[in-house]
Image (cartoon, rainbow, N blue to C red):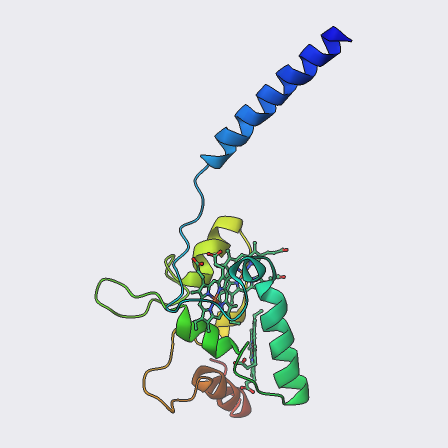
Length: 144
Ligand code: HEC
Ligand code: HEC
Ligand code: HEC
């Protein structure tokens, strides 16, 4: 029994040691949102953000429901990251909020092939301008 106890203590020491080592593994540099808090608690968003945006998409696209709280456009508006020149970086830039973490976790998303990854300039600007031009292009039969 004494021997078993010793083994357990040793094992615990080894395990604790490796957790400390794990904490030193480089973690992604995630830019902070431009407000006090997110639309849901940070921890909840960290784990479930995709549920919110995908749910929001279905509500809007299938049911025509438009609310602001979980709107994709609002995520982009508040999670803007600016470069040294003060210009909002696009999803192509590794500093982009959504990219910062996705590059690190190797999760690929195609959202920005259609959606704007930076806030649109002036107020009243159409957030879906890139989508709309895409729709117009396909309606016109353009191959671009
Ligand atoms: C009004 C500003 C605002 C809006 C709108 C907003 N967020 Fe956030 N978000 C924040 C802030 C502030 C934090 C907290 C960062 C922290 O605690 O360091 C955050 C945290 C997060 C995190 C966790 C980041 C981390 O550090 O782990 C994710 C993921 C996230 N938001 C995604 C979204 C998505 C997706 C949307 C749209 C549905 C959204 N946010 C809308 C401000 C916003
Ligand atoms: C804190 C790190 C982090 C941030 C910041 C973050 N994501 Fe994610 N995202 C993840 C992880 C990790 C997954 C994969 C989760 C899983 O597979 O269970 C994921 C999954 C997703 C998915 C689902 C992909 C799929 O194929 O199922 C979408 C969509 C998504 N994120 C969109 C976004 C958008 C848009 C932003 C910026 C507004 C963003 N994420 C910011 C970490 C992050
Ligand atoms: C092929 C183009 C395309 C891709 C790719 C795409 N979307 Fe969309 N999305 C659209 C169109 C078109 C609409 C409808 C525009 C409208 O009605 O405002 C839309 C609407 C939405 C909406 C509701 C409007 C809003 O701003 O809240 C959300 C949320 C959304 N998409 C999220 C996503 C997410 C998350 C991804 C990636 C996993 C994604 N979309 C990928 C074309 C696309």
